[in-house]
Each structure stands twice: as structure tokens, then as C-alpha cells.
Length: 150
Image 1 (tube, one colour):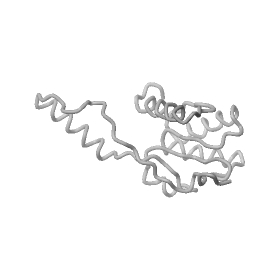
Image 2 (cartoon, one colour; image 1 turned 120 degrees about the vertical axis):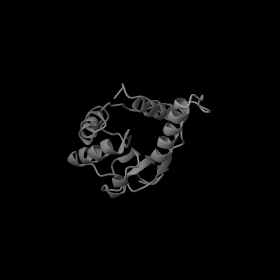
Image 3 (cartoon, helix red, strand yellow; image 1 turned 45 degrees about the vertical axis):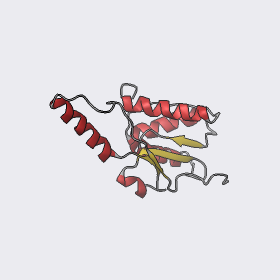
Image 4 (spheres, one colour; image 1 turned 90 degrees about the horizontal axis):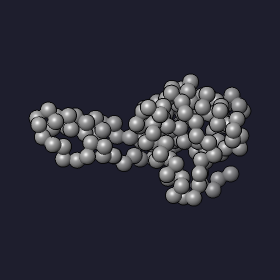
């Protein structure tokens, strides 16, 4: 959703990274970060771009819905459509196929947030920017085709 800073940041990061490689998205869909939202969003995307070959979904819950939407349309992941989620939920390894996803270190994010809060409560200025980022890590599983694979 546009009113969530995480959603905006993920979309902007995706578009910026594609642009740096000379690519642009064939479509961007917005959803509510639920499996049902991912199901509906992939349906809308495929209506506008039926030959889309890869999808990055803003979270793993929506990716679960997108997996189902692909199957309903007779598409196989990853043979017909590569699919990547975001968050690396513990359940993502058990999707069918297991979901390639972007891992965020939620523990480190939480620790950073608590440290900043505690510093503010003690009257100390934060030593690092509040909006600092942690580097995400791509976790490759079976929902994407091998580079150069048919």
C-alpha cells in the first residue's frame, strides 16, 4: 500500500535497480500485502502483460497468492514464470515450489529500533540515522529459472 513506507521503499528500490540494468518494469500493481491481494495483483498484471516472464512481489504472503494465481491461469513456476518474494518468512521454504525471496534480518531491525528508542528515552541523540538500512540478502530457491535456462 502507498501509505506504508516499506512498500514505497521496496517499489522504488525495484524500479531503480531495474533502471540501473537498462530494464524497466512491464507493470506495477498495488495490493494489500495479503495472499488474496497477491492473487488479485498477479491477475491484473498478467491481463496487461500476458507474456511477463518474472515477477518480484513485495512480500512472501502476496507471493503465495501469486503462486496460486499463476496455477489458476495454467502457468508453472518457474518454467513459465519466475517468482521472487520479500521477507523470507519461515514458511517460504515450504511453498510449492520453494520461494526464492529477499531475506531481511528482522532481529537486527528490531534491535536497532529498540536501541534508538532507549537512546531517546535516556535523552541521548541517536548515533546513526533513524532511517538507516540493513542490506537484504537474496535466498535462491526453486521459484526462479537458472540464468540462461530455457
